[in-house]
Image 1 (cartoon, rainbow, N blue to C red):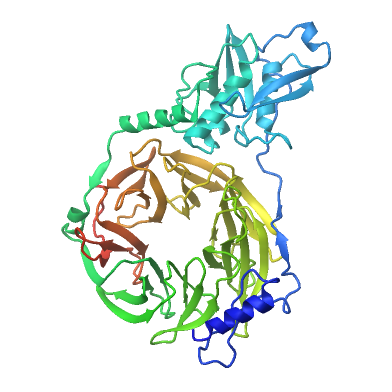
Image 2 (tube, helix red, strand yellow; image 1 turned 180 degrees about the vertical axis):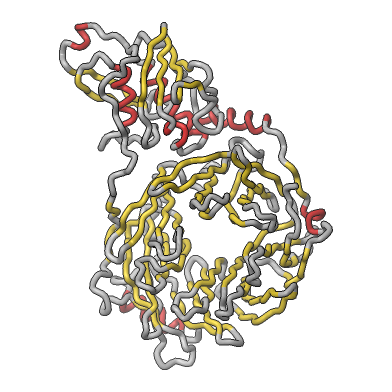
Length: 591
């Protein structure tokens, strides 16, 4: 890295106006660094552009039932109210009375049905509101009994609801407030498929009884309701880190000591088994685990203080490269057969690196490097407008930038391929929720979206039905939601509801980490060493807890290629330096 100062000077003086990201070859220099360039001379379709996603018509579009059901007993309007041939309806898109919009609709005798169907249709352009009724929901019947309106929905109201304590209140009281605008209606009974249900979500609102308009609902009231349910929840099975690590039959191998910043696993050698990379403040260590033994393969000094790591094959030679990055620098190493060698460097131009992934996005047989960056000039963090860049390795031993979108409205992204040979999809998580789309080399094609998923997200198979699952911690860190992908839509199949007094942080892994044949979903909490581990049962999922302590899960993967998972952890006593271990769990933690 001897010529970085000279490189940066050239970068800033010559290419600042046309590049957001660049890493230049130092041709003929002793550093041997490869070239990562904009590719402006190589490609014709690499111009900067705003993100434009082509929307396919949703398979389960809103099915508005305009004609009254013969079983309807709707609100009666006077001739005076229908004489003008139009009606002014107040629609509430939330639990606050301030979430109101007024629409004009053709006069109808079925005004209750008409009002709910307008809610199902969702906000119109310019109303600046968010959807409250899930896609696919159908209004089956309305029936006014005394001063109670029974409103009967299809099962999609519950099955497709996106979840969340605030969202449950938004949906329920949007219905209640909209119907109680009519003087004949004092309370509302919500039904699903003609039956009373406990909840459309995690049980924050009891729907077995009619609900009246409530003008006192606030964010604080909703939060206190959540805390109340938390206190009422029975405590799950607890594990203590000290006892866990000293249990009988646990295979434990010591690797090294120190505070690990990042870890990654992948096949650097192309041998079929995986190496483990551990990054520290000043170095990266490469370890090999096999046949119950461990050995260090290499150690490289890393003055750029990498805080994230990834091992993926970016060159297409069947061997993984080690990608180390922090907010400003990306360095790519390859395995020479005996040691790591630094090959490419991407410098601090164009905004902080949020994260990156490597996959074959356009199915051309070559992996792309996808980088998400913060826009350097963006000062309003609430907008979450970032930049996405797609790079590809070429036969000239360099990278060219294939695409850059300077308006990318997501603060996190991930890539997934549901089945080998299928198109790789990009998932973006932003302030407007989650959107999944693929890139065909020229444009983005939307696959599905969910307006409420905004927190930590992980993808995998949480059970054995072979359908892709999406697990999400909500943006408040209060609940975990399990979604199943069916075709081009997400269906919520379970959510936790008030599990712990600690806020949840992120989904760490989806894997059979104790090798008992059942897949666990591991979620960290904001308490150091605290984890919730979920496993599938017939009625959903159950969990057990690792209490706050001095253990930390770094990596879960099959390191030696024998089909069983290893767990890499950091563990320390009191203020001692952490020790890094590879564990092989040999018995179920559920029983």
